[in-house]
Length: 109
Image (cartoon, rainbow, N blue to C red; front, side, top):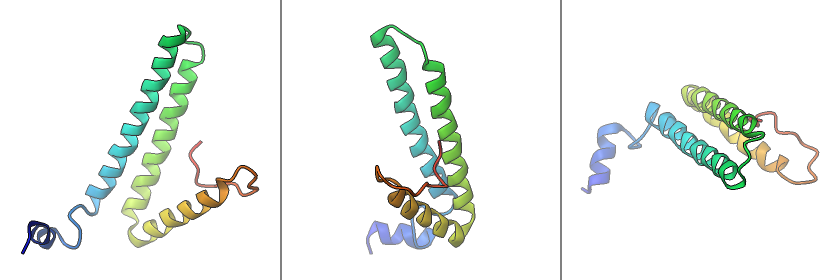
C-alpha cells in the first residue's frame, strides 16, 4: 500500500475534495490577480504615468470577485455545479473565436 492510497482512503476518493477544492481554486485565481495587479503597477512605474491605473485595478478586482463568486457557487452546488462549470467551459470555448457571434453569458467582465 503506497502513501497516496493510504491518504485517499482516509479522505475518500480524492485527497482534496469539497471545501478544499473550492478554496484551492480561489487561491489560484487570487494569485493570477496579484500577478495582473503587479503588471499594472510595473507598467505605471516604467512609463511614469499612472493615468488609468485605478480603473485597470478596479476592473481586475471586479473580475476576481466574479470568479470567486462562480467558484463558490459551483463548488457548493455539488454535481449540478460541476455540470454548470463544464457548460461554462464549453460555451467559453465556442465564444472565444475572433469572429464568433456567440456571447458567453458566464464571462466575468
